[in-house]
Image (tube, rainbow, N blue to C red; front, side, top):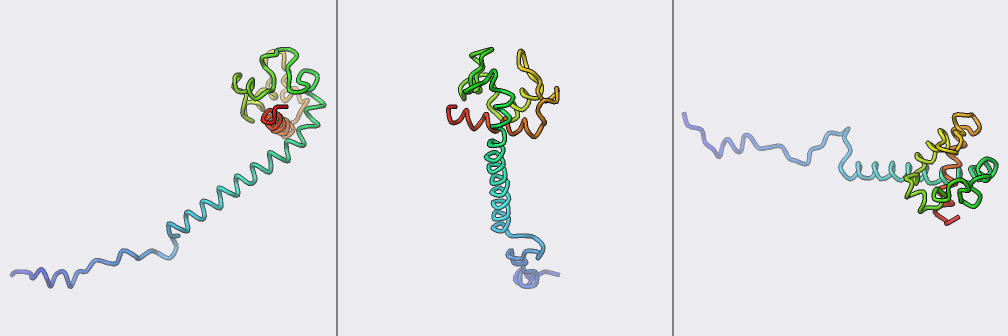
Length: 137
């Protein structure tokens, strides 16, 4: 028995490719969702840094200006809080500054380990340092 190819094509048409299950978002919807999430996260991060920098200012003046007045470093001039020195010494991120303030290094006390400055306040000071270094102190 021979099969008729025209008849086979008519009987077995492929399903249209436009079918999408109801519970899956379209590509355009996914791009929108991802964009909203990214903007929300970046908005929270930038507003938190701006707010925390202001809180960090008072903590910095209370605990850090003895050695770091005006962003300088009276103990080691090449390790000031200027943008250039922070980059050269690889301490130009919030995480690196938080690590340094928490654990200390060389003549710098471990303010976090000693319990002098709390972890949230150390984050505020790091935000303040990054802000001021970007402004040139």
